Length: 584
Image (cartoon, rainbow, N blue to C red; front, side):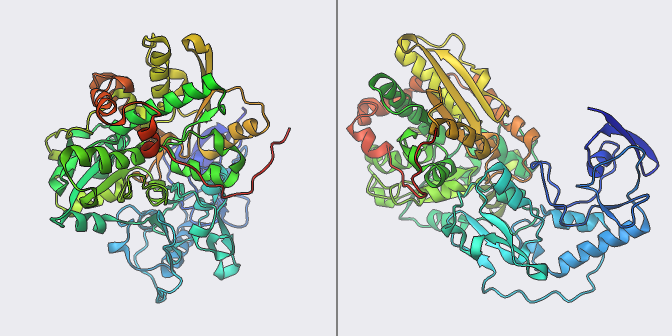
């Protein structure tokens, strides 16, 4: 691509044609404040006007985030006119924003706060309106809360919902000073096609979108002497939680996390990785059964609840391609209220099952009415990574200096295959390790299936699996990428045997409940920590070799896909959209 030479603040710079002024300035160490620009999305509206600059020859100020450079362009980013305009824009934004910074969910991690500091804002000369509670909040979703009063109309949530997830729930409505971002017709978010992935929360620069907080529910359970409170944590938590305490991204903090949870007062600290191994046994055997008996192929993973809901809305005619397996979170909950309750002699009604997830959609999943096959709700409370961090801080725990703790038996033992569930491609890699072993009676020559790793949107690999021959597998993350695979299935042109789909970019390491900010650099570091846990920390790297999993089948479930397994570990789905016919 051709290079363009321009001058920014008396510094000459050469950048690729099509680069914006904002991007060009960054290459020479000039940071222009912005709010609507976000590197996670390709297109953004240039709506906030905070990033204005002077371009010699242009009459008005230019929004640098959307204006491309040109040969010989001369840009001024720090003139009196520019500084005055930026400061006025931010002052007007704050004059129409609730003054709740000290107790806002984004306090200390708010881009509007940071931009106000960058532009040197010292006062607000306008009267801040009294924001009425009526109509301000949308609490309808079990996962996501909208606070209309804090929205600055930057459009980032609209862009990520539309271009990355292709769900298009959020859209600008009304006009002029009445413009607002909302679901169509201002309907409650729970009545829309929202899949609860939470990527809009990661995109939001302020506190206009956030997870439904259940920390008080956990405190209440922990303080109730009649309740036996247990906790599970998803694989990616151990690679991300440390960021909330200033620990570099990609640092494994498993032991500190266990100690913190025990200090908070949980009776038992278990691990979702245990039930990830359980999921692989059930899902791997389901794949083999379909392949041998002519079942519906390709089979698609069902671990990601926002992906499942997306399929229910947009591909209801293809629901029979989904594995019937519950997610690891829900399998754990079912085992907690049956197997664990039985061996510990605890009445399941007295067990409070808590999960820590990187995902806002897990709150929605736990509330699905079918997730109670034990006779009790599988999972009672779901906290995001951010909620757990707030809880640890509230308890005054010095997280950084905690000693390493150990998981409790019997549901704390896991394999390396269980831990890589947190990265895109991890479920597929874990499944292939076990499927190969079950079919051939031997281990894969190389347990590292690297073609399904990484942040490429769609990945695939072909593995020769004994008598089954070559199995072609596909992996997609981000639902725009998932659509590519699903449309091929709908057309009858897919040659995959097994497909893994995760809603969030990077998989669970990029989940909507994770630390903010999350970007591709951070996703790579978190995923790298999980692969390290697989290859260096764990002595067992295959789900079927986990001793605790063998024991649960010997003593309780008896066999994969058996009667008890189907009763407790499998589920069904709901057609939420129009059943569309296959098209050639």
